[in-house]
Length: 485
Image 1 (cartoon, rainbow, N blue to C red):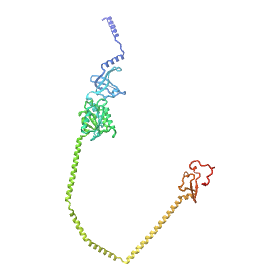
Image 2: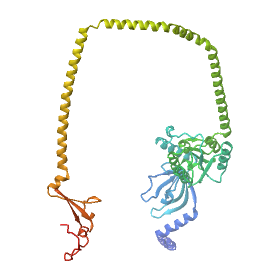
Image 3: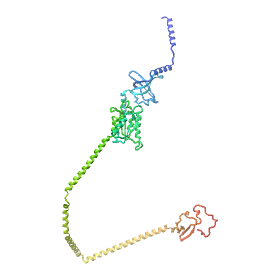
Image 4: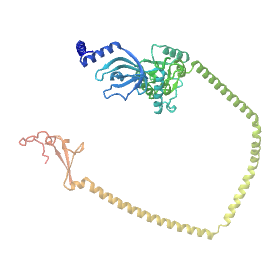
């Protein structure tokens, strides 16, 4: 190829490049973004969480989904991440639903996550086991904290869906066994709101007051029909488990079928395999109870009659062994007759004995002994009389001193001693002693007592003592009215 040919080729290439449209970086990034979002507007991606280090300070979560051949970045914004039921953690296989887009700032593509759920039952079971171990470590599943069920509750509270077959089965079974008052708290038993509603219902029943307008249940039944692990997941939430653990009312859990197990079964006070079985646990069979009461009543009556029969037979046997009345009195009668026969002779013997003792005592008394005894008695009487006279004189002296002391004290405290010091005592003839000036009115007759006598007086200026204006000094006194002073 000659130099001329080479120059021709370069000229042709420059002309071809010049015909390609020119784009800015932002234009290319926007075109790619529109292309990707248009091709993948809404997708579900299954993969393993990678690079998750917890939520950002803004509340958004950033991680990646990967499998054995590729990886895609993922963003879950705060409003969505706060509602995610599954615990997002490193290595968990999940199914993320959202839209694929690009991030021009890093020249990468990513998925904007709108919901996350564990991939398959295996992941849910692993999450359930982890939560069970955590709550068990807190002691929420211990048997020591479980409460016994009442034998015959007056009111039964049921937390379940009001439209399902569960509530009909419970009511029908209670009616057959033992009709009771039933309060139903309607809740959702599946979905995002179910866990919060169930927990609120349990707390609401516990908040009812004894004796209030709405009766407080004696036992609660939390029930739901069977379903998949995803359907029953609300009863595995911590909020429900902790509400059951904090309930003061005993709770029977009846969630799912016999083979279904949820965390509420571990924390409740009794677990029933079905809602119907929960109703059977809550109340006894009324017919069986009546039959048992009748049986006890019959046994009590039979026992009472047996006791009476045995007592009557024992009384008859004892009476048969007792002797007749005449036989019992034969001995005492004979002893009485013998004693009566000996009484007259015994009196004569007693009289003779006493007479002999008297004669013996009289023989021992001589005139000298009598005089000596009389002299001792007189001496004793004189000594006693002298002591009594001394004591009487001492007593009279003491009383005289006490009387003089009291008289002196009385004289000191007497009003007469006060009068002797220059004071006077004012009285009214019919009302006694005048203590205050306000008790005297103009014209009142008074008696003024001095130490040496009493004089009469008439009040003329009583208004000044009561606080009212006194009559002027220039006025003349009424004729015949004496002056107080």
